[in-house]
Length: 507
Image (tube, rainbow, N blue to C red):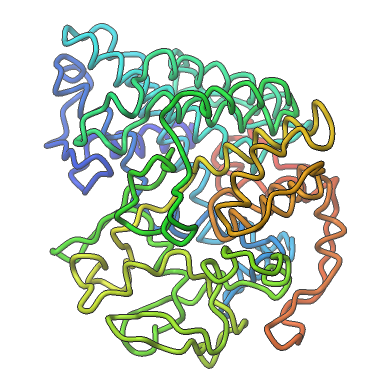
């Protein structure tokens, strides 16, 4: 019961609080359940509540990104015991502060979405707006269920499915397996796609809300994780053939310019902006990845630093390498002046991710491009969660699995040519893995989960990680695929669940 009460409380705050929201809609007051869900304005406020957690530090800033940090692409940049324990698959991280909230915050989003799905259909209002809001709810529920299922669920147990009709006062056990979750997520995303408009049909004031091809794109990814390659290929190709999306063709580095936040490469991202008032909202990942103390000019946090393994994985001439990683001596613009990259004295690695640096390049970037509050290092660059490039990679991976080597060449070569590389023929899964790693490094696409689902994590993590000069900066780790294919259920959920929610085996 304690877990259920907390669930309701968090969700209520998500809908009715007056903090800044991703959609720039500020619900006012705290209406009771009896007088809410009556008007169009209530529906709009309910939709805004689904985005309430997008600006939380541990939602898309750090938090779940500590799990992505487990991969061979990056290391914990500064002393952070909980982050170190996560990277080393050490169960002593359970109960720590940075990842304990991942489960409850995402279930709060699901609760907010369920409230919309259950209540908005009965509201008398414009039918097109009603469909869009309901579709947005199905999408947000499907998206966060996928994030939960992929991180915490396997063939032994999934995550709890809380339907719109469920009584929130009754604790729900975990699904029998992650495939049960995937089937439910697929149903949610199909309903989202049926209700949502195309991005090109949306007003600019609605950018940041869900749209049809975002639902198709995540359908393709869910099917990929489910190893239903035929359907992964189908939905990726629906996105590709929609006429809505294309790669940014002026160069890979241009993808990560705020001026391209809503380019055709955009599919789904965390809408970000600094605030003249010093609060800001969105993902603070740019500030988190910025070198610690940022050479005395800004409060960079210095986490998630690249490895030599990532740097060396790029082919010669791949323009993505220099657009993705800064190494000692590299020239770049910072606060309006050219700098030569040097690491912070205490940094684990001599590298830094560069993808999110463009807003810091301007002279006097505060407050137009960068948040004045360095403790909340948001910028005006949307942090991508799904790009069109990833859809091409999903289509290629699915096609190779269905039809063999060469079946993904067309999609992969679109990515390679944009990166300044020559086209190739007969590309295999090994080629696909390299392209996916190099294209999506340092992003929410999650290299760690890729290694796990490919069955490559045990071998990859049995090797140490190295710095620019070849020195070992992270020792080899022991990854047990029977245990570490999923992360531990947060201890407080087990404690509050009254024995209904069980821990993953081995944790």
